[in-house]
Length: 287
Image (cartoon, rainbow, N blue to C red):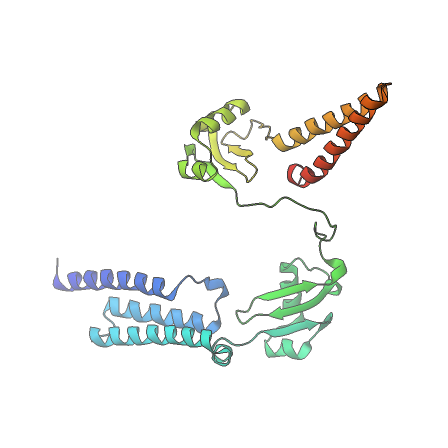
């Protein structure tokens, strides 16, 4: 292999590893939500690294100095932005109010070079199809538009209805492409034997399962490769609630059928106790 090819290969490998280190040092960044300055900064760093790799910068030492300077300046600005709101606003810019009290701020739209159609498009992307439903809209320094709906247009939540709901945690994927993920099972306090019993009860073989997840309640949801097969998803919580409800109903029936006043009172009291328990369990078993 010729010397120029070896030199090019070595430079490319070194710059590849160096770029990986730079990305890790800069931190996790969603490029779709970075400020314009940061986006340009990342592009410049990439261009400098590519130029050094291709030998467009004759003096490699100068190239590395420029690259290091640009990276250090970016990190320094990030640090100063964390310490000073003034520097943060100067470097990253400030948010711009597009709508306030349900009214469009036309002057601010002109400042961000937004047309009315572009505003409506951004509102639609936030599921606000009717301009009259919007109370407040703001463009963040990243260019993203966030929307606050009017109070009477917001979706109703359990808090609005003053109803308790069970706390939820993220589901654990225990099967992927027909393979059992033991660590995920362990996180739920389960094992392979439990999983095999569940699959056997559903009449499904492991190699036919594409994805299997266990939710915070311990219910197993599966999706199989053969879409023509209908799988009945578990309803353990619903069945448990139905069983408790039947017991409560039976106690009320017994209280009405007996002529013994003492027994009638006992059945009625126990039925009331179970009803109170059902009210407490309802958010966890039915929602």
